[in-house]
Length: 163
Image 1: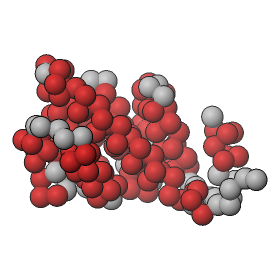
Image 2 (image 1 turned 180 degrees about the horizontal axis):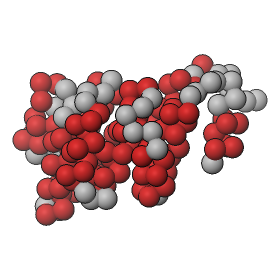
Image 3 (image 1 turned 90 degrees about the horizontal axis):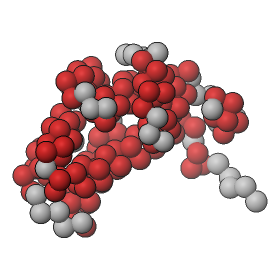
Image 4 (image 1 turned 60 degrees about the horizontal axis):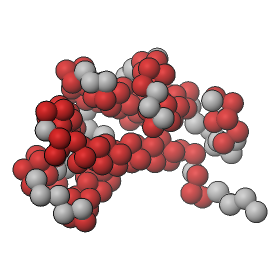
C-alpha cells in the first residue's frame, strides 16, 4: 500500500506520521483492525494532531476494548476534526429523525463532540439493538471525517482532475 500512497501523493510532501495515519485509516475502513493497530502504534503521541492516536482509539472501540479506547481518547485530547464531526452528527440526527435525544445531547454536549460518549454509545449498542444502527452511522461519519482530515496535507481537492 505504501507504494500506492506515494504515487497518490506525488505532488505533496506528507511526513511519515501523516502517511501512517492515512494508511491506518484506510485499513480501518477496510475492517483490517490489526493492520491499522500496528501502524498507529508505531507513531504513538507523534505527528500532526496525533492522528495515529485517534485511529488507535477508534480501533480499540471497534475491537471492542472500551477501556483502552478511553485511554487513547484521553491521550488524544481535543481534536480539530471534531468541529466538523459534531456538525455532521447533528445533521444526521435531524435528517434521519433519530428519536433518542438523550444520546444526542450527550454526544454533542454544548455543541462539541464527546469521544467518551461515543465509546459509551458503542458499548450500550451491544446490549440495545435499537442503538446499533445509530452507532454504526455515527461511526461511519467519524471515519469519513477523520479520513478527510488525514488527506488535508495532500491538497487533494486542489489538484486538477485527470482527463
